[in-house]
Amino acid sequence: MRIILFGPPGSGKGTQGELIQSKYGFPKISTGDLLRQEVAAGTPLGRKAAAQMKKGGLVKDDLVVEMMKERIFKEDCRVGYVLDGFPRNIFQARELEAADGQRKEIAIDIQLPEKIIVERLLARRVCPECESILNLSLTKPKQEGICDHCGTELIRREDDTLEVIEERLKVYHQQTKPLVGYYREKNTYRRIDGSGGIQAVSRQIYALLEAAMANHSEKEARK
Ligand code: ADP
Ligand code: ZN
Image (cartoon, rainbow, N blue to C red; front, side):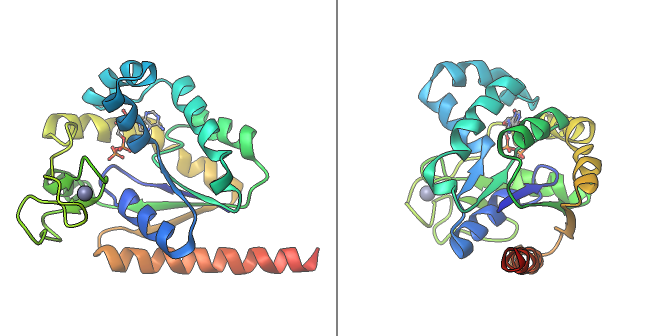
């Protein structure tokens, strides 16, 4: 099973990916998190990716694709995995298909109006240590400015400024939106309303996943 979460920046892919991971045990793979780790560690990949990330553009396809190919063939992905932030354009989608095309797939588009996206991203704080994500307009940490999970000081992501958010949205519309047509054609496209609270969104996702998994085991049984 491959679960692809897509939707604009700020639509809740990371949060929902984490919930899917704890409920079903499929590892959540976030290209954004992986790239940020590379940047923080100052690796050659991180050094190549940093400039694009800072201004909200896409990191070069070949770098991201290589990184992901390595990740999805690790042992923990055998039964399934959740992708957050990949593929982000048609080229990446084709590469994913070429590398791991046999897998049962569902692509969930978390839809959200632009106005809410900007509000959410400006209110987003992240933990640099354990990568938890928090939206100050939805949830307050127990102690102001501090991560509930590990006690580290929460920060605003460097690309969560109005200027960079606008650039990320532009890139989303130009490059990522065409994936709707791509996954529709494959018949794996589903869309949900991302504007409710965290639970309202996850309920819709679980319903889709359970339908997909039931359908899958039925097919397996008939083989
Ligand atoms: P967002 O909240 O915009 O979805 P992410 O954490 O997914 O943020 O990504 C942060 C940045 O990392 C992007 O703006 C981009 O520069 C880079 N990035 C993440 N995933 C990809 C990808 N699949 N291809 C190219 N660049 C990527
Ligand atoms: Zn933390």
